[in-house]
Figure 1: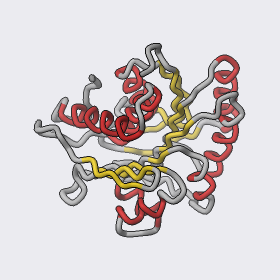
Figure 2: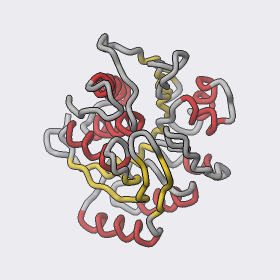
Figure 3: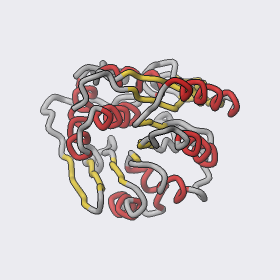
Length: 249
């Protein structure tokens, strides 16, 4: 495993509650002893219960943030969360690929907020994105939207023809704890281990994706990284009985 503090970049929105977005990403990176860098794509008006609207950061400003970081730093792993459009995401990936080391990108495809806001992404260029990223981490509802298949597991398997997929379990009885990793042509079910009670958390999807990014950056192979990240999110969900939790290994 990597012994030094590895650098990770997150490109996502700012959530003032700290439960999701770049604040949650940085907290998670630090918990895994990684050095986190962040680029803000949107200032969101929300708390852990209610999402009002995103105010998107000007595209030129986002790239100014990215370019000045790339002057001094190289990132082997980059997590991407909230973005204004798929075409914008393609431009981000293209810029990242100009690094000396082409990074592995973990895309958490946020299509709607847990409080009910729909970002209404045009998915016509989805295949180009999928073939450009290392892994995507949709939940059950997101994978149905991305694949067009109402069977989430089959939809994830279809998407895995283009990239690796970690299907995150949802919060209802059908989906709870049912995670699947689709990696290099194989399917790995990941079952919950934590016997403590778990509680829904605002931003839990962001936290998991950040944990997966950190574990990969720390040198763990994909399956081990996925297992470690699942155990981390279980502890996070058990940390409080409220919608905001504590980050700890």
